[in-house]
Length: 136
Length: 98
Image (cartoon, rainbow over all chains, first blue to last red; front, side, top):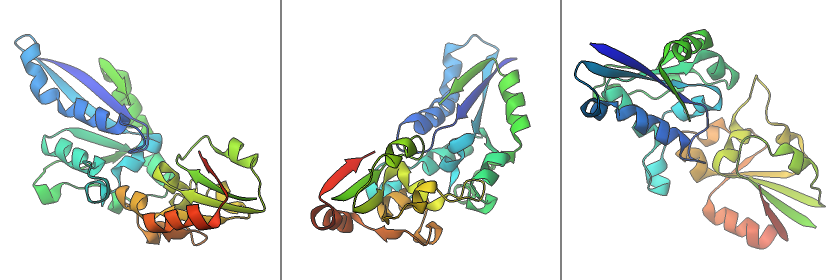
């Protein structure tokens, strides 16, 4: 089976714009893209949070309670539930003094996947090896 | 003049802010501006907090982003929407949204 690697890079902080949400929902939509591909083809999306984008990954977002909108946290959990690989830049977490214990976790929803905190070099490798790169 | 400045973004505002002055200056951090009150980038607080001013941050916008009052710099007062309305009508003559 021929697989196409897609990389979704999220580099903007949450909520001020739709960028983060669009990045995540586009990545999640990989589940239905198969119907547009030739038989034997598939896509493998990877989502990477870098720069100020890592601020999207904080748990405990109360967007629905205060503004009636689906939180970025909920989108990340949905992405983990459909087994997306999501990477968070270690250096940028350190830059913003965000501990890994503050990050979103979808274990309560039964997800097997977790956010993967990785060095920037690994994210650069994902960018270098993907066929299509989407930056949000 | 009593000037209230709403800070609604995290980056790219300091040049403008540096050009604003008033007898009484107040910063009200909303939307992604709340990160100025919580993030210590490379261990250093936002330079905005070094200004001689009063600082406020909107509680609802903190909570939306997974942040709480415990994350906020001690120089900043956490306020809700009602408090912001009071600031607008009672404390500042002019308001700027950045």
